[in-house]
Length: 143
Image 1 (cartoon, helix red, strand yellow):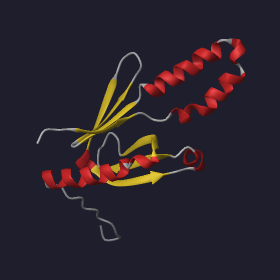
Image 2 (cartoon, rainbow, N blue to C red; image 1 turned 180 degrees about the vertical axis):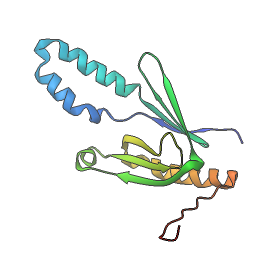
Image 3 (cartoon, rainbow, N blue to C red; image 1 turned 90 degrees about the vertical axis):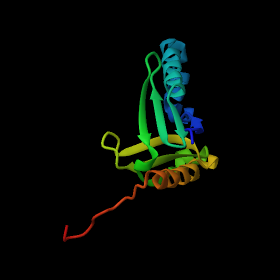
Image 4 (cartoon, rainbow, N blue to C red; image 1 turned 45 degrees about the horizontal axis):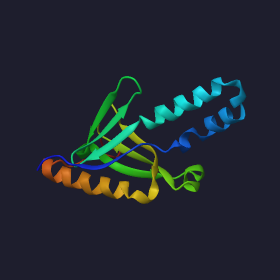
């Protein structure tokens, strides 16, 4: 079966609220308007895409960098909802992975009601079955 896109999105602009407030209060200096616009553009161009096989994270306003995380490498999914994000119905999704370059992969300020974590779990398990990959943790004093 061909790889299909499951979900695509960006972090909420809520992550820039503090900067927007400061720039709004000092807008008469003109420069803060450009600073606020830059932060808005930077967050807007931060794109996450989940497919049936992997997660792609693209960043960059002028030049793009894309990081890829294979779904079968995800070991654990943790949803973090600090009060600030909870007010806006957002959450941080933290993925503990066996990937050496990104052992903890974070999807910041994602919509909580979107069920992203459920999609992730379903596709991680499906991909592990397809690749016949199992996670073995060796814990204890005798290791």
